[in-house]
Length: 99
Image 1 (cartoon, rainbow, N blue to C red):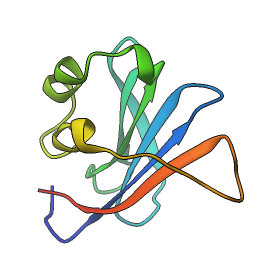
Image 2 (cartoon, rainbow, N blue to C red; image 1 turned 180 degrees about the vertical axis):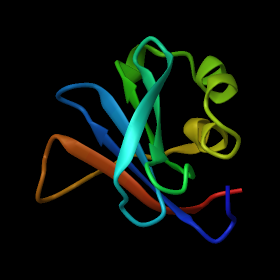
Image 3 (cartoon, rainbow, N blue to C red; image 1 turned 135 degrees about the vertical axis):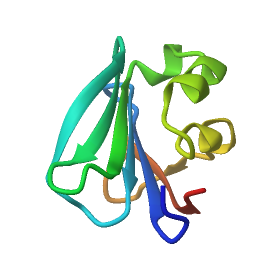
Image 4 (tube, one colour; image 1 turned 120 degrees about the vertical axis):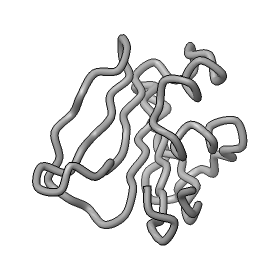
């Protein structure tokens, strides 16, 4: 992954889904890495555009770090979730650079 890209992490508490978005929004296809763990790849450049992790609170962080592509899993243990005022069921932490 490119170091210049930013990562945006959103957690939907109601559905227990973690969304990781890399760089600018792009049309992407999801590829299953494990049950409930998907990596999103840009349809045109094949760069990693993010990941979706279902039932996030039940997943083992170490296992996720090993499954996710390099750079994405590195942030999972250090994510601090902040309640979003406009969407009470969404929590987010923005601005992580990707390794």
